[in-house]
Amino acid sequence: MSPQQPVDGRDSVLTLRGISKTFGAVAALTDIDLDVAAGQVVAVVGDNGAGKSTLVKILSGVHPPDSGTITFGSRVVHIPTPAAAHHLGIATVFQDLALCENLNVVENLFLGQELRPLRLNTVAMETRSWDLLRQLSAKIPTVRVPVASLSGGQRQTVAIARSLLGDPKIIILDEPTAALGVAQTAEVLNLVERLRENGLGVIMVSHNMADVKAVADTVVVLRLGRNNGVFDVRDVSSEDIVAAITGASDNVVTQRAARRAVPGDATVEEGPRQ
Ligand SMILES: Nc1ncnc2c1ncn2[C@@H]1O[C@H](COP(=O)(O)OP(=O)(O)OP(=O)(O)O)[C@@H](O)[C@H]1O
Ligand SMILES: [Mg+2]
Image (cartoon, rainbow, N blue to C red; front, side, top):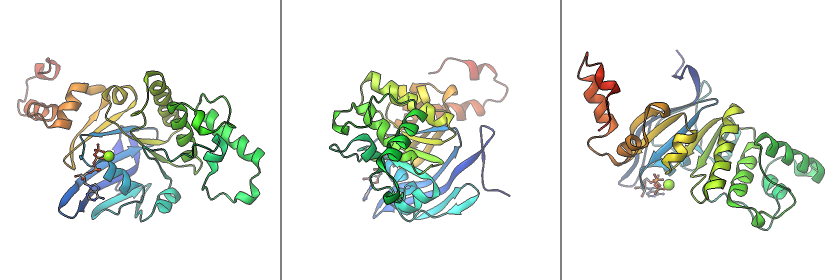
């Protein structure tokens, strides 16, 4: 039998089961499960120290897990290096974006990419850059300006476009809107929607409940390194997500457990939340 679990009726592209990671005495992640399907946006949320970055680093080949399995497509895989993640088709846009301020958009897009640079002339690179940016419906006026002159949202766009060069199946965005204003945040959320329309699986680490509600399909809550709830975004309020993040005793998880314990009480599902 395939180890993949259906996600909303779709097959999971990336499946984590029982992933654990310790740093010395610190249990950063314990027994984490995660499923991401093509065309699905999974928000990973949690308080400071919940393990979000550790999870991202495991998937991007920075840290190996101590135990657990990662299935990509139908194969169990190991991701020992960032190059291995890239090769598999897992691209990560880290929070600092790692762009070079003094280089222009095209130069940033192709910086460090193993694309036989001798055979790529500047015209071909510029054409490919516009292709990528069009794919994202990106609002960048010219690709010949230094990145230093772009807005935060435009920089995020360049970083996302760069990650698409390797033709990934999964893209991980670490706090993509953390440093952005309202209009730029909307621009980046539009980008996330383009990624989903293009059939990518998106993992979005976020602290912002409005962003999560606006763009995610599924919300995975981490608390103290453990899964503390997986929600369909349509079924959950921001307050419930926050309760799961903080571990408030009267949170959605305990409420659900309580509802299950009262068989036949049909009104409870529809009743007001506490
Ligand atoms: N390289 C490391 N060495 C030692 N401990 C680490 C290391 N990386 C993470 N940790 C610990 O693992 C736990 C999870 O950290 P992690 O950075 O994954 O949390 P996070 O959810 O990303 O938090 P934040 O929202 O603050 O970024 C924390 O207790 C952290 O101190
Ligand atoms: Mg972090």
